[in-house]
Amino acid sequence: KNEVEQSPQNLTAQEGEFITINCSYSVGISALHWLQQHPGGGIVSLFMLSSGKKKHGRLIATINIQEKHSSLHITASHPRDSAVYICAVIRPGGGADGLTFGKGTHLIIQP
Amino acid sequence: DTGVSQDPRHKITKRGQNVTFRCDPISEHNRLYWYRQTLGQGPEFLTYFQNEAQLEKSRLLSNRFSAERPKGSFSTLEIQRTEQGDSAMYLCASSLAGTGGEQYFGPGTRLTVT
Image (cartoon, rainbow over all chains, first blue to last red; front, side, top):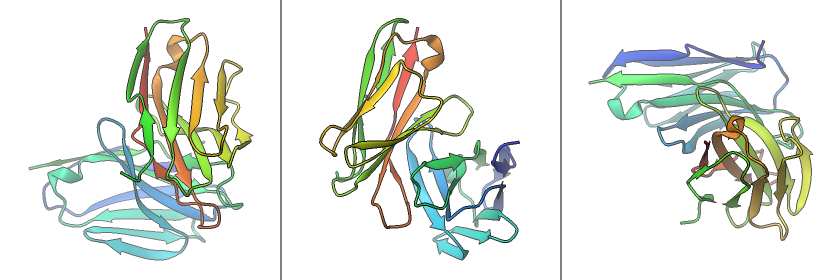
């Protein structure tokens, strides 16, 4: 079993739909990243959070440390949101051993 | 551009050749990470530097792989005697110690071994 599990692996939705991507982890963490990766490979950090909820534009990320679960929500989805969304966790110690990544959720938003 | 840069962006090489990739982190960042991502998978940690010291190496980093960060600024990742299984995206990221570990990623170098 991977230490970081994401669901769903693939998601196709229509423009305007509310999107939820889930991430569960089995290790102790100090923080969690949500990352976006477009075709071509570049990765952009969307959020880093260790508790509660963060919002940036149409994106919302939540984390429940007790349940070891985080969600990424996209409101009013748009075709330009199509990308791979990756959850990654930072272990206590400040990231000295890097991030542990989920396999990603491949999101396609159709016009 | 003050982000993380990587060079080259794409590299095609024949099996058995050596390749070297470069990463230039954000200038004030003292931590630098290398990751490898194969098709359909999430990235996997390879190695990590704090300043010029290589502090962590993954089991994935075989003895054909070597990374350096000689002056604590840019880093190089060399793969000797490349194999087809080395084909992947090699990602570099940097962070500033003490800021909670948020990492900033470069665009990656896509390696294809034929």
